[in-house]
Length: 437
Image (tube, rainbow, N blue to C red; front, side):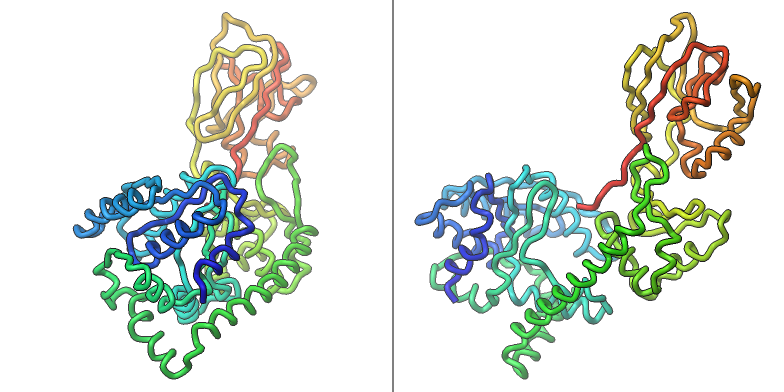
């Protein structure tokens, strides 16, 4: 295989990008990728080529790698950025290092930029085998895609059709040098065990096993595409927005209940995929409990990056700021058409004439609040919010405007205003659901 020709074919759709960033570890794979791209640009107009090295600080020998990468980039007339990260200690050091690395990449990419990594055919086979022994579903067995969105740009893997053997041959032919990561020989790491013990045995018995695994991934991608199409149809029917100003993902549970359990799970996987990692098939009891709970039970299904909550016949996805209680109160000096940032709770737009002799503050429910309404007298705020059928998870973060010690207005409910006070308008823009990178 001609690596240069293969690279150009895979990268041609992205020639209009402003920047190509190459993830440069200093190992053989990324050095080959960077050299091949430098060779390509001699005869082909490419976007600006840059390299980025992430130093994880996990082993002493790695302290020498930024200097090695800088020497390469100086020799090849490239810009290099080196980023030093802290890797969180946990059950999977590999996953924690990857998370830290991709946080750097996500911050780096401007709109339309491309991050190019050196993942190859052997890496794809390792990924598929690793996911297979963990019992991954169809989505997991699609393997690593050649392209996917990343932050404001794209992640590209143009070497997925090239084997490690082909990269080694290119490196030897071009007389390239690279660094060796000593942890690559440690079979205690799952991927190293697959690389050293399992893949060689498979290739010895079935020489085409790498290509066959890649072909299986392509079949799974087709199957996943069909499942996604079905999910899109189901979600389109169940999509709901019972509260117009609440910009949260929401589905109508009564529509989902009409589907089989398998279609419910498929629809939810698709709907929640941008927001959180979902549990495996054996841990979906939380969905069943939420779906089948009594109408007034208000159950919650806790997931990796947030929670699914239910109110009446609707389910909402909550994450980020929604998982924490906002600050109890803050004093303000309101002026007409003022927009205030609320700590951990979106923002608030105030309109109206305000009495400069009064002390104003924004606060949240603590319990026992009352407000005087025109024609209804003093009413308990808790009951008023129940009357308007406001979901429970919103009630304690709904901004309240106080003048001195008197509650005078409730955000987003113009009819909940003190009868004796000058009319004001409070428009609350709640936090949105954060998507994963």
